[in-house]
Length: 274
Image 1 (cartoon, rainbow, N blue to C red):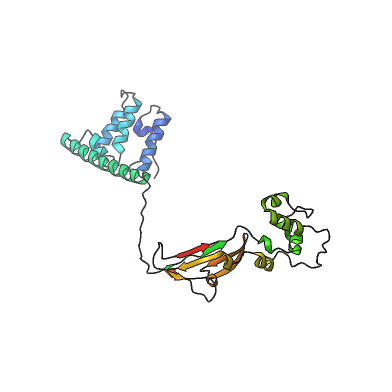
Image 2: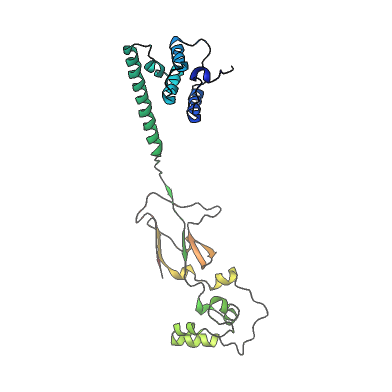
């Protein structure tokens, strides 16, 4: 539909651009810019007052009157229309205020609810009759047994173990930590002046660590699980960066993991180490 000129209902006087933009924006929000032809008697009277030569030149009041005459907002046109009776305008004013208050109240309630970032947590408790017992790993702080070293072991792995310097001489700190009889033994062991090293060395692999690592039979003094005795045969060997370690209740193929009924003393693993 082609819109008539603005001067047809605002008069020939110039209108400020900001006021005109606000009028068109509000009308666009209503879903249509201009009403169809055949205006109401109240609108015709308002248009005649706006186009009269002696009309007041207050742009804001004229723009407000024209806007209210064409507004489609529920209740606003009935409230400000001079053609309606006082009781009808009062009724529409009360209804408009009640609806506006309900809208603001509900909107503020939803806004505060959103700003509170509500969360919903659902917890389901299920009591288990048995709990899987965790794996317990035991490692010795010393990766190898010093007194089980051979001359070949010390010659090839002494520097890697921190017992020898780069020139294959005993580290002074190691000698200071040893007792007198052990110091004499280690000094002779680290003397390679007349030593003929073997052509082949097994290296510091698993076999080397397994042979020189601490054995569980020497460390384990007592063992009980849920009140029943256990021993070194209940542990599995594993090699880590700490050397040779032992695992209780390790997950192995064909082996059932142990379980426990509850926590506390007497329901788990009790060991005594040397």
